[in-house]
Image (cartoon, rainbow, N blue to C red; front, side):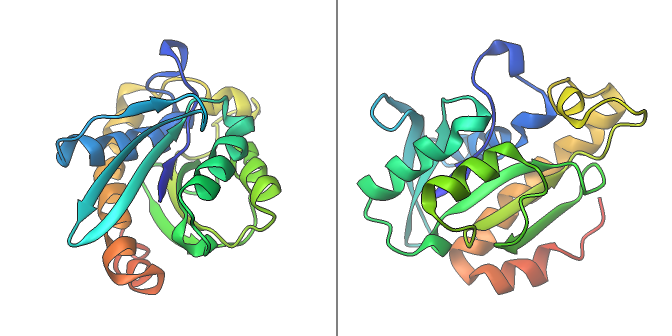
Length: 189
């Protein structure tokens, strides 16, 4: 299952915090599928088959800080018994804009969406695809930074990262986390 994190609604469309949504939505578009909304799971979901692998795409429709409610419901309902079969795509302040990295588990670096997922799954061993959005240039809070739309210059760096994020998801699905890390993590934006 591939989960793209973001906040629902037009207010958040195009913000740095919605990079996870953008990657998962791009996968659905390329695979020519559309999302259905599951009120029970509090998510937009779609199912695709990629190189013989069945993949559930999900974008929680909860606010970011409550993403774990949706993810845990989807994990239970889809019978996912191995947490490393959950791939979460999210924005990352600690990576330069446009940089994409794959990792399994580890620190949530203060990301409230990841914290919520960890709390609801009882572990942080899920796979992450981190889309770098960079740190704010001035002392403003990270929260304000991720909830704002990037400048056109920043956007020109982030748009290619969406494509690399799609490649990273496909690499994890087909070759596993280690292969995806080797293939993606050394790339420069």
